[in-house]
Length: 74
Image (cartoon, rainbow, N blue to C red; front, side):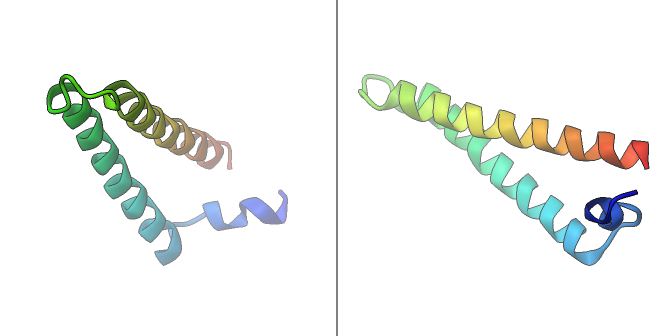
């Protein structure tokens, strides 16, 4: 086992805090996606904001999935 994965063995305060922060950022990005789709009708920034927020939310989902897979291997 390498040193970089030792922190994944047991839940720590830092890891729990990071998960909560990622959840809050994810909710904000989902809210931005919904607002861009429904609230910005007719704006030229509608699609860049929509795809930016959707891409950010997807990146968080993929990151958390990879972290869970690393935890399962240990």
